[in-house]
Image (tube, rainbow, N blue to C red):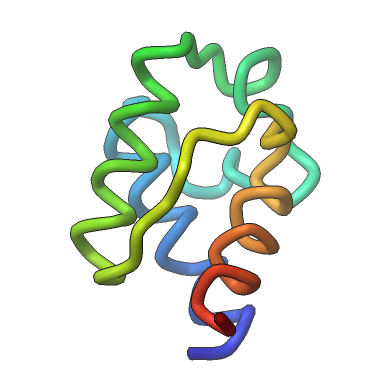
Length: 79
């Protein structure tokens, strides 16, 4: 799976889970500040991504932006 494909999936899941428009879910968007997510929202997003992408994602406090999520999934899938 390419980073572009991961980004599309992440954007779709975040838009659905946070009830925002997909065009708002840009790589530089801060998930908490720009997309108004709380810890539970982020947990639900990561759980949905785990299910959809069939990977195990550990909670990571360094995930701040949409791009951080994409990079984290890309690194996890590469292992």
